[in-house]
Length: 141
View 1 (spheres, helix red, strand yellow):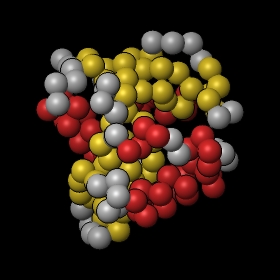
View 2 (cartoon, one colour):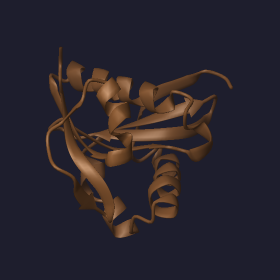
View 3 (cartoon, rainbow, N blue to C red):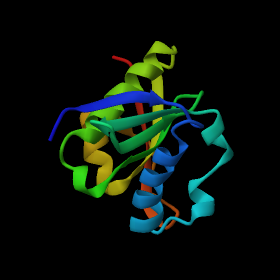
């Protein structure tokens, strides 16, 4: 495996890659209805792509209020620190924009991953698209 590189993506120019990853992970794997996956917030979000060479393998988005979401890594690239590289890039961009507090809605099984990145659980468990989630917050150290 070559090195994973994370870059800020362009919602219009990189739309096919962003959609391919999110549809594979959320719609196909996790059975999230497409109408819940795609929303108006995509147009105003900062999007990120994790790439191995020229192939996009992960994505995430950052909303103007500091919410991080749609963090997704293709199945064959999980466990290879792609998610960590993505999140570090998103956190760095958020802080560069003065967003010292980042929030996300985490799938319960992923909470240890986010805790390693400095996020803390701040809610009880709830269902989102039929999947157990909790709210998590990270504040710049």
